[in-house]
Length: 195
Image (cartoon, one colour):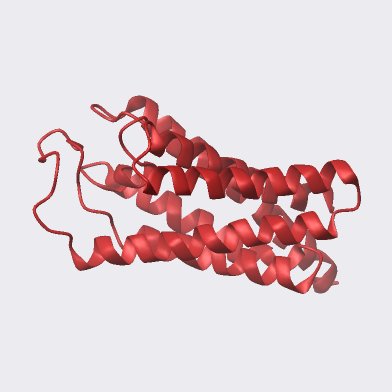
């Protein structure tokens, strides 16, 4: 009987991960004084007096992904989603340095990058790479052509957003946020549909 309950519970965790992370991050982006999503990555919300909210958002969403990953069909989709969740947890624990004038009392460009900011960047790279790969694996295993296209488009949105942001493109942080939210919501939707 516990096994029958375990699968829906794991699935519910993964269903909740994407919407929770997106809602908390976007609510902060809209309400934190001085935050501009066209100039500041969502990770900068982990800084300042309210930074703990985004840190918790990363960690909780990551834990939900790790717990729920096993509910996805296929070994690789589960493994990659679990790795993405671990990357989210690490990104939450390794806080990015203030920058771009956020929080307001910090300089636009930090003089040096801390070890935890470097760790945050590495963790984000792991999380995003695994999430992109998970979307492509889900595209390959999709039961319908529409699902396959949606999965591939979600992975591509994150890949393109990340590449654009890393290249210094205009509003790169916004494209990265859109890509990350799209991919996370797609994985959550896939878990919901598999119930």
